Image (cartoon, rainbow, N blue to C red; front, side, top):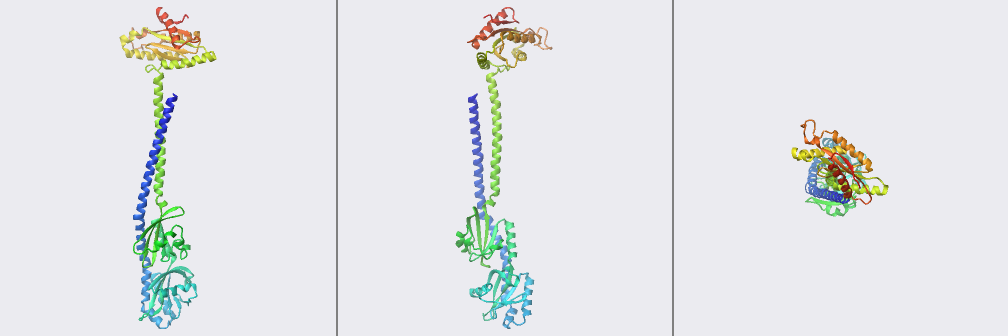
Amino acid sequence: MKKAFNTRNRLLFVLALTLAISFVGISVLNYKITKASVQHEIIQNDLPLTRDNIYSELSSVLTRPITVSTSMGSDSFLKDWALDDERDLDKITRYLAQLRDRYDYFSTFFVSAKTRRYYHFKGFHKEISRYDAHDVWFYRFIVSGKEYDLDVDTDEASDNVLTVFVNCRLVDSTGELLGVTGVGLQVDSVARLIMDYQEKYDRSIYLVDAYGIVQVHSDKQLIDKANIRDMEGISSLAKAILKTRVEPQNFQFTRGGKNIFLTVRYVPELDWIIFVEQDEGKALAAARRNFIHTILIGIGSSVVIIALTLTTINVYQRRVEALATTDELTGAANRRRLEFVFQNAVYAHERYNRPLSLVLLDLDKFKPVNDQLGHLAGDQLLIRITRIISSAIRPTDLLARWGGDEFVVLTESTLADAMGITERIRAIMIEADLAGPEAIKDDPRRKVTLCCGLTEYSAGDSLDAMVLRADAAMYAGKARGGNIALKDVN
């Protein structure tokens, strides 16, 4: 039993370990394959596609004010008005207001190179000065020699709202600078556009100028203040990123313990760079959930499989144990079981002085049943007699088939009590119709009776010794015609 228990435990352990290794191994392999596939898809397809879509949409949105601004730079009215000593403030105010309303821009303006006067759609604003921090853009733009430029700054003329200005050079027919004109887009509107892109593509998107300074971002606190050269993770890549011109580039870095994929593309019309970031963790969230679900399903399946295996083993183990200790035909105990119980009973007798007796029962006139009705009928009769004997003995008594048509009852009783049990068995046998009501009158089963021999345990007795004495008493009863119970005479 102990050996079988240990073998079963080893089998269950090996099965559980095999299932665990299989499920976990397959799950890990599947996760790695999925992770590699997701990474490849992000780097090669998703991010570039998102980047290019944003580039197209953003270009169409921001190049329009560039077009308007450059058209202002070649507008004859504006040139004539500037050359006419900037007379009639109402004319320039109406001109700038009409442009603002026509294109729905946040601001329109003109700064005279001659007088340094700043005009906008509301009228005259101020005279600019190279010593004013808000006016540095004007002098920087003039020195740059560019036809147009983009600059992010607060608009003093409109309550200091953060604005993207498109500055364009205004020159006369000889190329002499007359001033700087242009339009302004509210940064909030561009930021909302970026936010729409982020929600649409579920990625972080922002714009950076050629110096690495953030120009457009959903977080307004970063605009015109944060520089990618100082940003965590990306700072080491800043130099390579800012060199991006003709061909877009892909990068990978770590920020806050998270792996980030980055693709960038240069926008020549703006001289800015589009940044599109993808957090690998978000992209792999579904894969991780699938991995966890697979593990949980594996654990659940393993538990079910082990439970079914354990149940099956227990069922078959009980069957094997039953076959090892039970008579296959009658269901009574076999000799192995009888020997085991006898040893325990002897121990109880010697330790606690409990009585122990043995009854050997043999069927009288059983052979004619086999001869006339066949062995199947004989087997069925043995089964019924086993049930009769079992119903007559106590739960603490043991009924065993000794062989053929012989049975043994081992009982913790005195010889006198054992005789009482035997007579009760015989009485039930006599009253029972072993043939059944449908059998013919002279059915041989009706003549079957029990002849019994009884003996009581003596110190040092073996099971065979007790059976031998009971067998002698039983045969003495057979000599008297059977259907009798006799005690051994020793």
